Image (cartoon, rainbow, N blue to C red; front, side, top):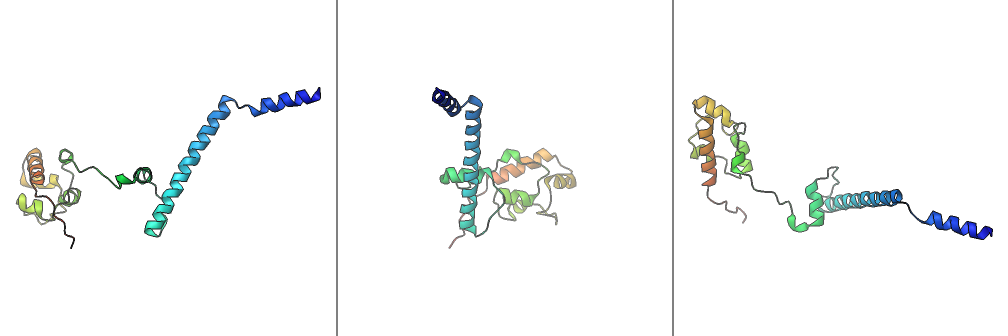
Length: 149
């Protein structure tokens, strides 16, 4: 008879309770995330020759879906604000350095390190009117051409 008691104890110890199952699922998810992070480090090391301590969601998405390689949305004209400098706009919208200066007839020597707010204050003009002019100028720019040989 002692063997039957032992068998019942073994059968009871082999069954998992709901909290144990939940803990194993969480542990498995954490382990999977760690594997993805290490894989990202290895891919980064292989491509750049160095390890990076930073992990971005975009890097993880590239591991899952390589076709989305650094796909960032294009800047939106509606988000242009008066705190932005012309240098910032040139970089964000990939404009030639003097494009807005020539298009808007800006003569201020601080260009491109001039904010839209400072320009409108100096000109004593409505910031919204200048913002509209900037948006129009950017939307009318010719398509960028490749400079590759």
